[in-house]
Image (cartoon, rainbow, N blue to C red; front, side, top):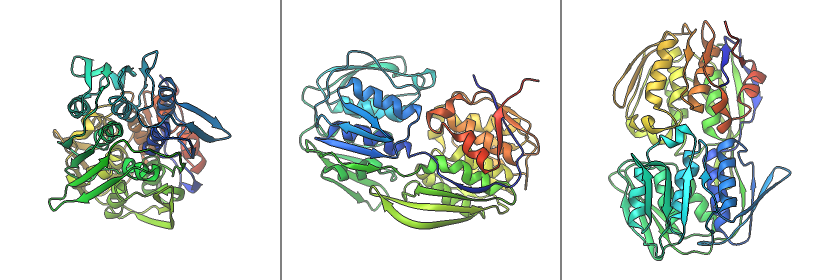
Length: 443
């Protein structure tokens, strides 16, 4: 374990660039491996989760190299992966595991998957159910968790499937499986979730359509057995990583920070909407498009924040940002209510419980239900002084280190090591803006 401490900071100032988008990085590697010809990826997130996906794809036969910061993938074509000769260990990468399980489910061989303690505790039922309908079979341990074996279908079937809850991972697993199935596969999601898979599939040459329905749901249809062609991919900075300097600048008085080249996919900007409703001063400068994704430079100046209600329908657009939004809510005036958070209980940790426990440890009043949080803000710096258990969850660690910058007393976390899964240079970047994050000193 690597205990870390964040001490109260003076005003944060400067410009920074956060790492590449994790969601896009995973998908770029998988689709590059499924294309014909060479794919180059610029700005790939070189963190543990994505590197685990790259290693797994090499075991599946893809030729993946990095040359002076540019990742080069020699694709094997749709349906062209080979049976791996060892267990695929995805570490902490939930996205990598779920999407790769979908990808191999339409290949006629057996693949074994495992991961770290956190990933082995996460349920896989939601991807197993539709993939079984497409012809794959599974052998799992109790609770349909990793380790598991996927017996890919000899004759994968197209399906029409309605997701019980909006999930980009489940949707993407089905679409990746459908690449090697004849005919058209359709997925209906109750609320639109991040659409990086759809954008990248279209970029690689697949025929894919989306339709927004009258009840607010979205239908996505993919024509199977396309010939994907290798492409250049430019990965924007990850808005989920940008969330930490963004919130830090919002809650530390006198701060003014600019974050360059951030992806602002409209299905990922729920945090920007929520912070703006709380009174944060956020600008989107130099808006442009890169690699089929909208991008902007984010500028934020500290302002007093007020409590709001975050509606359940906003959850898919900011599902990973609730822990750090809780840090903002702790510093706001009034109560912030976050609704429809059931999905947070099956992330890298039970994030709902972890956030509530961490806030209590820092002297912040919080009420929790099965799928909601109500945080009573301190109207300024919270007491702090807590020691927070992160439960192998990188976002819990970074959220409470962010809260420590704005608290009256230092906040520590029991393990900063999981941060390397998505944001290896987190502490260095934040310290460059004026934070004081470092190892926790015993005593």
